[in-house]
Length: 99
Image 1: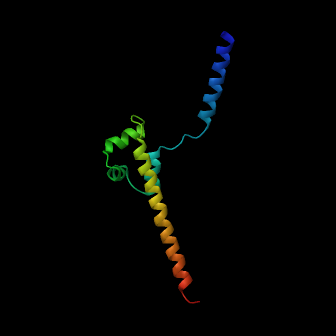
Image 2 (image 1 turned 90 degrees about the horizontal axis):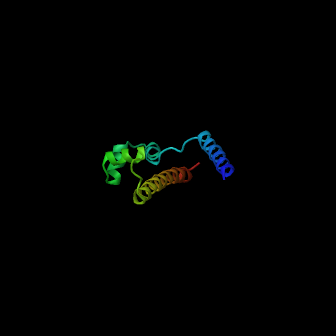
């Protein structure tokens, strides 16, 4: 039994060292604010939550509810859609202009 416990402990140490070496994943809230170019306060307003809730999500005090994650994903889709529309519009303008 003692040997298995030691091996398990070594395995745990190896696993922990792997995760310590990997870059830590950026918090979803911070990443979203950065990618959308909005503040945490603006994100709170868009999600209909308090700024304190956003802070708790960032700190990991409260787990981000699935509904909020889904809304955040929709914000990203909306941004991508707007970017695509803009790109297509520019492309179409260039195609229509006589050469």
